[in-house]
Image (cartoon, rainbow, N blue to C red):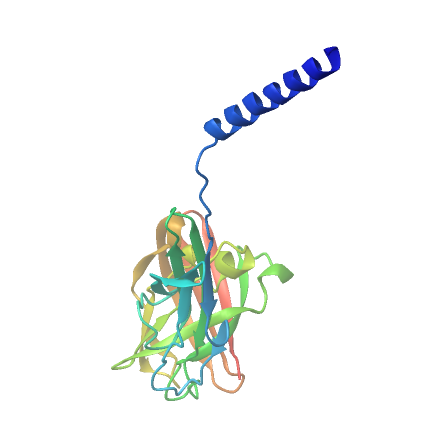
Length: 242
């Protein structure tokens, strides 16, 4: 009799425990992380004489179902918001699932400027050796790409008027490039250039002026110096990249 009572007590306890467990259960949700598939290569180098770039795009899905995809294009040095000329571009694809979880993928596109002959044109893509305040360090040699683009009318614009010192040499990125500097070629063989722009050094700020600019067509090099108001002088040698 005592044995049967113990069995009945155990069964009753089990029923109460199961009932309590079922009643306390909450509904659970499944979250599918967003997934982005980029079509084509993640790194693209165009021909310098390309006339257009058509992006292959990407698709975003959540649990196998397509969701909204956002695409943003950043031209690092010349302010382009579309891949429509010489520059180094980042194409960012992003999406969010229904719970607000983000995903992102990226593509880089290099559109070089065709090299001029340094007699009739100084446009082109270059690597840079930079000496700051007389200090030569391997870290700041053969940096790039550095662009010089032809704006027309003898006017040219540099992608970085300190030769990539902070962008590439320090690895800070394009936000620390000195963009916007232009030079006017009055007579390239005669090394007659006008350079009177005053720009800033990226996110650092501070005024930067160009103090000299000259070309050597035989060695495919350009030399220039810029003076930063914070007490630094950058002597830059650009060599065309073939």
